[in-house]
Length: 82
Image (cartoon, rainbow, N blue to C red; front, side, top):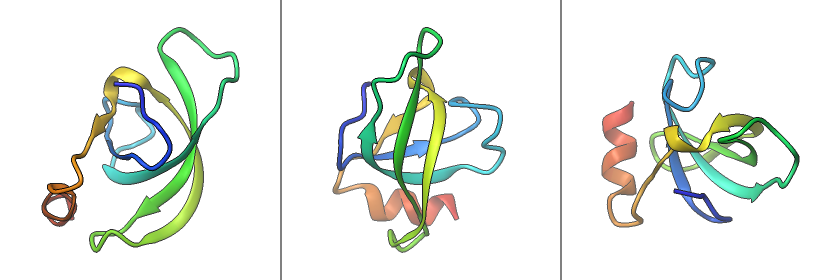
């Protein structure tokens, strides 16, 4: 699943060991910077349980570890992740 601008993804330890606590992340941009195979840099906003942006971040993650959230399911999944 390759994220695109506007997508909300669930970022867990599967994406990188730095994410001990899972978070929701709204993607602003996927960088085309050279990285290791299967890894990518994302710019975006960390979201709170209400779906509000709380911090702008750049994160380095494995694409295979990201889970895209469907728009309809996002509030339910955000609340469950809290």
